[in-house]
Image (cartoon, rainbow, N blue to C red; front, side):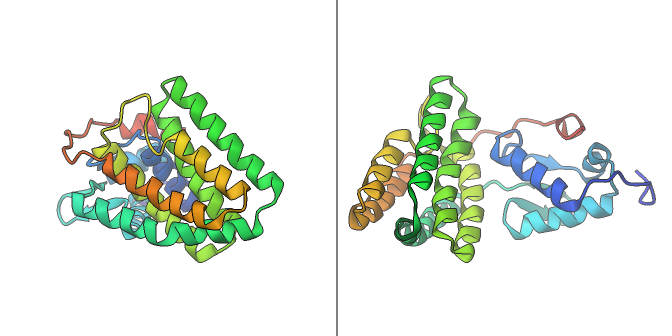
Length: 231
């Protein structure tokens, strides 16, 4: 594709969001090669712009850039998986406490709806949707806490968690990700104003999620990038 080709009115931020969504929705498996030329054709933009988006994704550890081999979706190692969950156990109890100090009844209602939607997705066997809603539950708690720095950190950690779950989760297909029971128990403690229990439940919940990992991964499925990202 020519670098001078007229580009469609799509921003780099939109390209970034669509690639991240594909990763989080499990449409791009860990290890999938991200070929600049194919992505450029799919989005109707130059390889130069695609490269800048991939550099940003690499900085957030969602993509690996290798000299002479191009880009691919990150495939986290077991050590990295333990680091991610260790980081989440450090910051999320504090996020829960901050959330509880600011939360209004409508906020608890939003969290309750997310749990209900997640449960519905599980019952329907929609693994991708359930994992996304599990992450949204945690991110909503962070948004209510209104600490932008911690929210940004958590957003990146949850993106990496999604990759980890794709690669190593051993839970049954009908019960992926965090688990509605853990979320329900956590929300009940938050609603009751029991800060100590809520923080403890969050740590226990993340520890259990880490224990569900089975560190054996399969070869990534191939993905047709042009079909996946075509308008």
